[in-house]
Length: 276
Image (tube, rainbow, N blue to C red; front, side, top):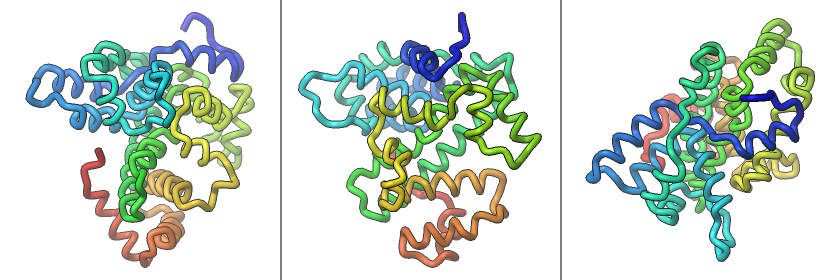
């Protein structure tokens, strides 16, 4: 990066032009599919794309900036986007480069934090999609994609601003009473939530993502689904003995109309479905 952006507006301008990196595994899997015509279809590619929050946002940003004039609806289904643009166009216009692991080669600690954040997003998205199906949500794919992207601003900052992100982490580790937003404001000059909100609006990411940041929407079923999945993924990231998990099971039980012990068994088993 030639010059480090110093403000929220500067970061938005930078990210508007930035080539979003993707996970190494995504690049490898897409190359494998591209090399074998018998494997090459929109469903198999969508499966790879929607396992990587960075690749997903890369594709959605491209689709919004290359939208057909007569397209009036929001495009959040990755498989539908691939069918609309065509697979040749996808591989030519949305290449799976640069690779985040290579970008952060000199910042291994930042890479570990990025990969942990991605893993939590993947797990949360799997849970939210599973619950959306159980709730007969007609737009379960939007729930899946929105949950996957709940921390996309944080992921982008780990990729493009590892030094300041590590400073934020160091300060919070030194003082557990510090609020994330306060530390982010001290180090970055703005909060992660502000960046997430601006990116969501500017890149026209799923409307559900914006609803997650609107207190007036907090009690709607879809927002509760996503937020509970995000909480569960965070609280269970280090194992199943976190003190917050019993409350999570109870709240998820209220959402799904299930007993907490049944919820516990359900989430520990993991979602059993093909999400794309």
